[in-house]
Image 1 (cartoon, rainbow over the protein chains, first blue to last red):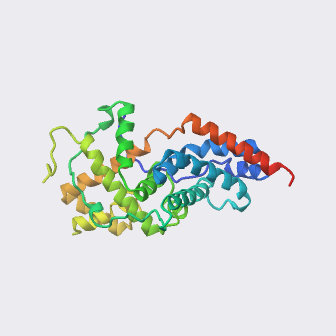
Image 2: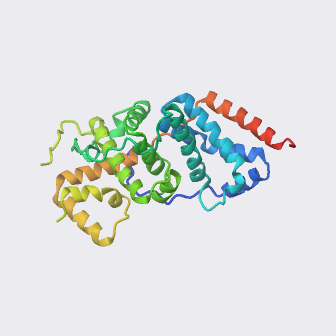
Image 3: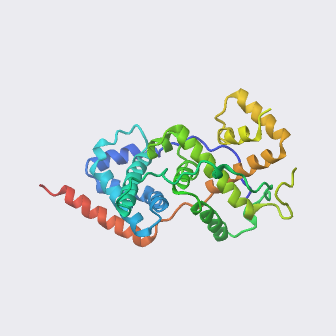
Length: 212
Length: 82
């Protein structure tokens, strides 16, 4: 499979979403289940990204959907349901972390490193088609391991923005960060992942700085 | 001409096509003249693309079942007259 480099289309919520939310607000449990089925995987991954603990992530997942159900009346439909529930889930996940380390206030940004994380270590061109070198499972393993090696804030911003396809503004809204903060974390996440993946995907025989 | 550091700091916006036309052409000129930044730009673009093609995350079956059961109980409790 060749890498498609066309820009992603702007993100849009599925057209039935407002209708599902309206029905869920009116007490239709089946409509709420459809919303759960649509987003539970992403919310669980997000909770794992932040808490790094399966049990905590499962609690966060359940609490996020409970809270969403209780507060459906407050969802205005100005943003996507996904952005709204991400915000709830992030708050629940941070509360979990605070409980774990009860003496500190924790934010997603707490471990941020502003110096070394912009360093580019590996400069080598990739195979034109790196995905052909690995099986689907191996490829997923490589991508997951690389992303798991990022700090939670970078992992979370990258996942929402580049994997889930939220806009920069939506990511900022979901994580309660400013747009410049999202942009700077996204850049660092992308560069760090690029560095990690280059070790696997660089063209055979190429060494760092081969182009100098 | 832009320095490599300036190029890197604008790389995300360049890839997302969010720069002004003027900055865009400066950045473009930089990568035609700097092979290292060209490689960094190209491989960062490919990094974003391989993650876009990543398999959607499947929730473990047991986690899904417990969530659905818990939400069902929650909805039933909310519906009960107080």
